[in-house]
Length: 496
Image (cartoon, rainbow, N blue to C red):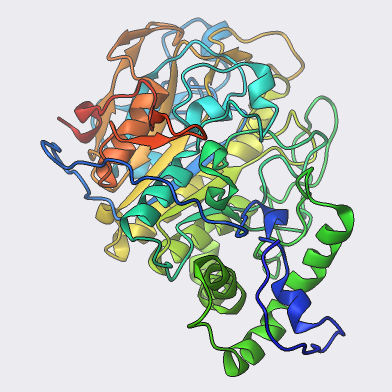
């Protein structure tokens, strides 16, 4: 437990000031301040760095859990048989000769700012968030189902946080370096949270700072497995807000009483912050105490999360959806100094939700997933560009895998898991503009040109963020572990 000693004071709700500061690391929402690891500094040489090294000052990672189909996004196959092509057609984009799905018209209009990769491939057709976002070389369903499995490798945002922490000598940042929206991954559906965005062997100190979103959606989403539910990713009220880590599920190692206390204390942050700033000195606190104090008292992250401060026209441009407003919050966080911000489009209500379209595939894409993504993503790219931030902000849209070339006969159509070939889109931060990498065969089932591993994407992102992809970090035994596993920097993604 983290303790900051001082005189006993009672706050407005009867909770003592000492209790407020005995939160024990804020682990309820995935950010443990109870300790700082004092590990050897990792090597991050810039020698022979190559093109656009360190061009990106920050990164916004959009993670689409469940995995969209390549056919209905960035690699349509209009000449394929109907059982492959499906119900949706291709449309031209702002890049001559490049077509994408007809239900992404706004994305098509800004294709000249984007890089499409049509040749992602790997051998694991499962919901492998760990595989997609860490350097781990092999995965299985057991690893993916256990957020604290000892075999886990650190999330890309956790690596960025750790290395910046090492370079700064432990100097406290004004904003957390590694932030994830809108809630702890997997905390709003019927199954326990899955693995992926955690500090792993670097320690919980390097977990993302999570937000929470407690409001419900305002519209029924198209059915999943025959069940409809209100989904905030489809629609929210303008007054619904993100909170700094409020009411997500506690980790298994957090006692229920302690978790409830943290919930109560977190609600008092706004009321207590001003009092603490007026009555406390922090110059004698050690580093970990200062880190806790900083989160408790700084209004900067709270202000950045408050997208309601934006003009209505800006908010409407992103869309009054949890995805759109989270993208807006991500822009605000980066603008305020955040280094790595993750927007997770998670399964909500049902584990089979989000982009995992085994059933009712076309209705969910047409009436929900594609238009919501199209609006929020394009608004983010254009907003960054208009503010002069795009060239220094790397935007990555990734997922676990793709979906089968052949449509099955499930109600409403469906596509199963498929990792042999799939597509992604990136923008800014040094990525090429108006560029397509790789190609698949006539049915979008296998890569026939320029195969790209998800580890290569991580390596290229590190390069653009000024981190040598061959850097190693120490595991719990002090052994050097490569941050991208087998990943290699791919200049093709930069147009080289």
